[in-house]
Amino acid sequence: TYGDRFGEDNQVQRVIEMLRQNSHSKSAVATTWRMADLGGNAPPCVVLAHFAVSGKEEKEGSVCATAYIRSNDIFRAWPLNAFGLRTLQGRVARELGRKLGDLTIVSQSAHIYRENLEDARRLCDTHFTHTNCFFDDRGYYVVNLLSPSPSSPSPSPSPSPSPSENGDRKN
Image (cartoon, rainbow, N blue to C red):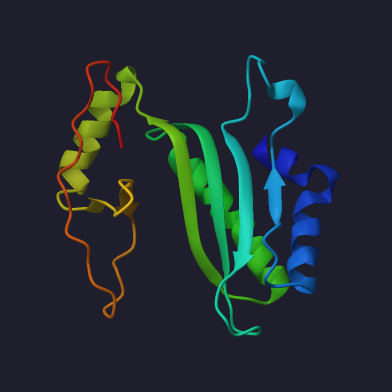
């Protein structure tokens, strides 16, 4: 599992110690990738998690995390992956005595499989009549699961991309 791989070589504990010694470290990264995965039949989808302490104030920064997912089944796997990554981020924050910050997930290939497309549409039509989704200034499609803070401007949403012919959503 990803938890087992993140735990190899005490990676998470080493990340915690690194941030404890230098809260501005840019090297607090844990990875699931092994060289044997290159060209293999079942490389991990969640590849790495990068942790950082945000804020200028040494004692008050929160622990933020950025994860890279190589191949992301948005309908079936994303919720579990996001929960697992948030739990891992919570462990790092708790052991550092800091607040939980943002979790950013970058998906190189986000997709919904054809057999799940109708279920995904039904779920969205029923529960997500309005979402805070938009293209940012860099051209990335952003799905914001939390409402923006009252002090920050709300970006104007762009229309969602439509599913491609092969049944995958391109967002």
